[in-house]
Amino acid sequence: MSNSKVNQLFFSQIINIKKHFFNIELKLSKFFYEITSFFPVCVIRINEFIFFFVKSGDYFAAKPFLRKLRHLMKSKKILIIREELTLIRIIFSFFEDTYIHNVMLIEGPTRDIINVLFLFKKDRAVAVGIDGSYIKAVNYIFRNYITLNYPFNKTESYPLELRCNLTTV
Image (cartoon, rainbow, N blue to C red; front, side, top):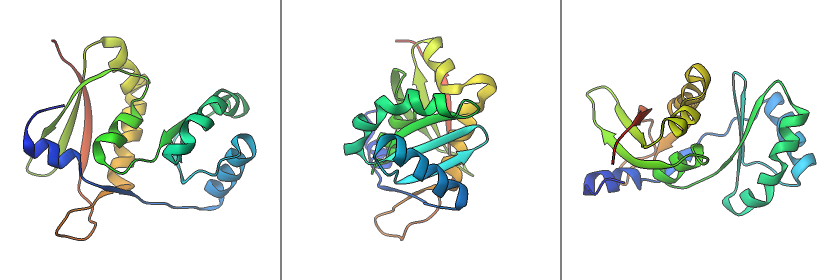
């Protein structure tokens, strides 16, 4: 992580995840509960991806059921994500199976870009997904479901984009 105080303050901001439960999400929540005995905090469907957000305390108990969930829903890509309070922790939750070398903030005039840096091509490939499908789904979640809490303002939407790049040591 970068040593800049501005980056540290930015990445330690508290986030909110919008929770929309329509009929399909309720059915998926029930399905998840029947298999794992844990009720998801939030369910987000994007194309072929289904993200089940669970409480941090339930994550390691629910994680062993991932293989069974994927077997029962072969046409979907199912992920179990820890619900986190801060921006940096939710970023690491989305890329849990990879080694992230550094996370940097690149400020822009219209939106800020979070540059997730990897040392190995394999880790970057996992983070991006086939044809960029996974990173597109994560960026969709950041645009439409995740809001930042500012200390002096109320919760507001802030356009963020994640990019995955390679770096050297």
